[in-house]
Length: 474
Image (tube, rainbow, N blue to C red):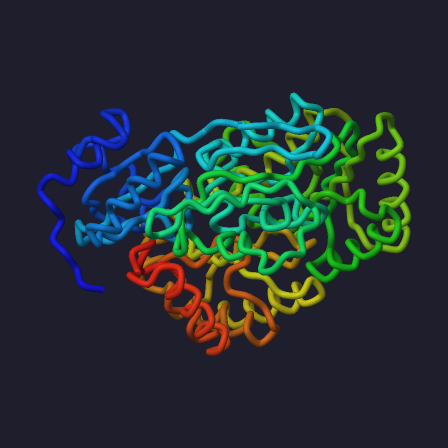
């Protein structure tokens, strides 16, 4: 790509498209140039916030003409630097947050058509008002936006039953790197007329185009829940419990989250009002939830009976069944507060990995043994969506300044130890957070060279000038 200088009148030309509200003042760009964790910091030529697909198309066409790189951005909650510009001062952030309309809800089709800047939690609430469920649920749902969820193929706590974001989308509207708009906003459940193009853009992290709208799947609204926090002996016991509960409860299992005692201790220490639900400490816990669209106490009875049978077999050590809606929310809050609690205590070295569900115990055991041998005293913070094989496996040493030093001094050797175990078990080094800048180079070691060649071919076809989110993924 031949680089051209940033024109002196860039701001004026962008303002002519999006108006005063659509262009961020130079002195206020910092919030858009830095990532949520504070690890990646850049310097943008401009931050533009179009209010419509038409404005986005015109902005991208202009930047394509000027040969200026584009960084698509939604809620800017990326954990991998996927929405952060570099420090060249040439890249333009195109933030879609002003595009936040729900265009249509169709209860008969069980779909809603939404714009990319809609906050995830707001979409959950809109679906609920129509007596429907949008099941994507993340810790950052109060601030992350659906455009970013689509671009990273976000996972969350409902994947076990409903799938990743990829499984929840029927159609997309995308502004391509040259400014053209692909309108693929179809509500069809079946469409066998060639390549399913939407799946190129879901998970592409903005490297192929800017998602501006989507048709999302809705589901019947759950009217009853049964939730329990269970103490188990080990991750192996947790996986065995999952198989047992699946046989007893079927597809009613909506969530199955693994947490170590270290995780619980960090939340109790850092989050005001957090309380331990069980009378004594255990090494490992599982948060399990059933849900159904029917009302009544059937699920409570089903889960209580299943857990009772598991206890008789020695599969669980202790447990508490949520006796009220508030207690259910309190159980989930312990799980959802883990990311914030870690940040408050001292940012750890984070890993978002996946392995086959049956290999989760092997991964935790082998990675922990190797790390403890290399770094005596290391703390392993392991938790995640064990029902789909996704473990958030984080490592730290000490708290505060000591933790920060460990993050910057040891992240490369720690990553190598963890990723080698993941690779040996046939897993992935990124389950739901994406690659961004953080894992862009690491993926070369673990992905098949032919896969990378095919990905580069797709990138070159759709973005021959390499303008769309350069330096991310590939």
